[in-house]
Image (cartoon, rainbow, N blue to C red):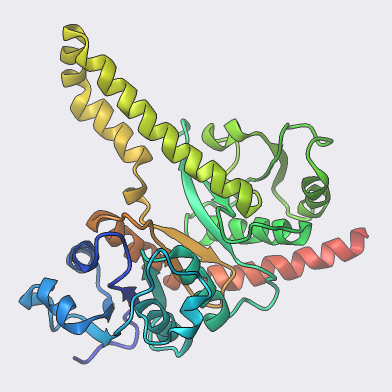
Length: 342
């Protein structure tokens, strides 16, 4: 069908995810009901059409892919398997046929293919995966990296700071985002060799607030927290586990007491529903891979249709922003400052 050149085109890995194409296609349909964009569904054509309602079949494009990267496969396998849905989805962005890509499939494969096929921005040595964490201050904290770069150098952390600042400004709408470095104490002298070296480099960023402790991620003290991918991934998985455990404990204690059951019933609509919304990963949809010369959103493997819808919305917001240009601008200015300070 004819598409306006200004229409955002999002390539969607229809075969990725733990539950197959159904929630992905359902999320795509939900997104189409709310926003104007062109979805390009990549995967087994017949299977996609079996889940896609007839009304929407002329509102999407389908790119056939005969292979699927499974969670048990290695990330580097995806580079060789050019008929896989994630490879073909990323190639659409590389070739300029799509503005962004969304995948709930093998996260390592998605990051590897996106980094090597789309390429990095000129001043980025390694990309970073960013995610939003809830706080008690009616805001979100952007944390990066949460799994893309396990072994980091100080230069990487400095670049993460610039990327986080740019994303917070251009996509989250925070004019002067406060940047913090995750450490084992808030004092300037705290940290290991990596964070101490990164601390000095991050001072070249205007709104760098210094070292932050883990609890500062959840109290709204800063808008962006920088860490290495090993620590960040543990932080992410630990946070998910804590949320699950707290809700489970609440249910156990509520069942044991009649007054608690009555109280829970009264709070269900306003308190519990709002709390669940604050900590539900589906509200964010996925994690942007910052630092590549394009847009890639990496979604959770067990994403439901709501998560896919919001991941698509993230991709649309990202491609309509100037975040990549802003990353480059901040790094050029910062490198100049670093040279003057050395």
